[in-house]
Amino acid sequence: MYIASTGNGLCYVGSQNDPFEELEKWVNKYIPKARLINNEVKLDLFYQELVEYFDGKRKSFTFKFDLRGTQFQVDVWNKLLSIPFGKTKCYSDVANDIGNPKAVRAVGTAIGANPIAIIVPCHRVLGKNGTLTGYSGGLPVKEKLLQLEEIQYKA
Image (cartoon, rainbow, N blue to C red; front, side, top):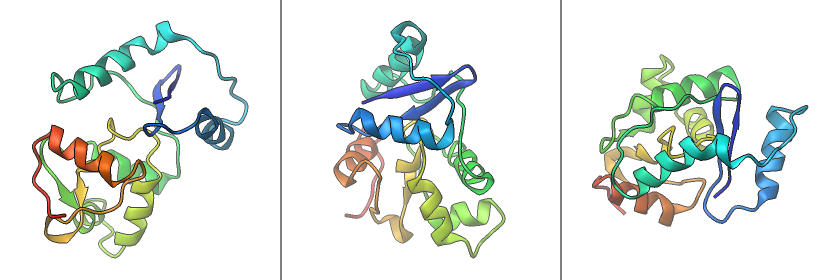
């Protein structure tokens, strides 16, 4: 799993087994003049907190992050940040929360483009009546994240 940060914070968390080229592609689109530098020391805090989350020892993250996307996407991602550990919302809830109840599909598209999955908890968004819906990292990954947080869902 590749992660990346800027001087403003974590900006990218790749899906499990995504190739390095996915990170490069994202950086070229959202930070076109950036140079990728492998600096494990600067990424250590992010890495440690992610490991603690996966080990069931962390429910929230303390570091800063740098959201890169359209204003609509950033608005959606900021709403996702308000969903507490172990809780869920459906897509229409998120659309209502951003003040645009007719934008349910657009909300789904924005959630699918989330560059810092897990930290911006898109896995906590389910379909109507708690049904399991798509996830950019794949449904098995979403299921594991929901199980980690002891969230009930309908398959």
